[in-house]
Image 1 (cartoon, rainbow, N blue to C red):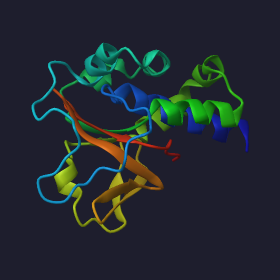
Image 2 (image 1 turned 90 degrees about the vertical axis):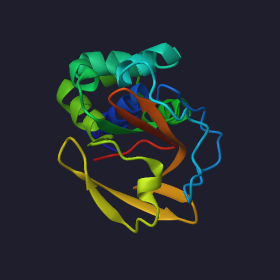
Image 3 (image 1 turned 60 degrees about the vertical axis):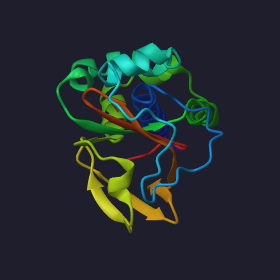
Image 4 (image 1 turned 120 degrees about the vertical axis):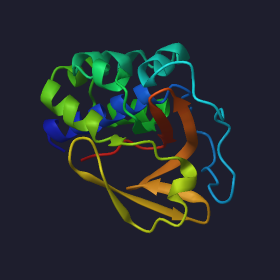
Length: 184
């Protein structure tokens, strides 16, 4: 795997973790999205924006550093709304380990970092219930590339990643935690 592709994988993980303010350790079961069921996420919007929610969780120092390095803090603090597909902390650690990269190496390539981070964000607030019945539905990300959204038997997949926690709300969007890093 080329160094650029490795950086893309790592960057994608980083943006997703920032958005995952109520992060996951990757051990959860897939979220059931039929009917009125949702994950254990709060029903009301969090007190802060996507960045504030991530910072208050205290679990994403590398992700926050990546968003800062890529110059995306103001974007993720803006009015939005945004939907963020956030890899779990375990997915982020696994990606760094598999690629043999450090967080410092990840932060070194700002254009690649930005492309990967924005691949985990779509414009608008898309709640879990809005995805029921999706069958390989293409959805444009903020970076211009598309992800494929599929729902089957209550399990939602974004490309090959499974949503493990849904509807984590912030004042300017929503976070859905996924178990893998997405690559543009």
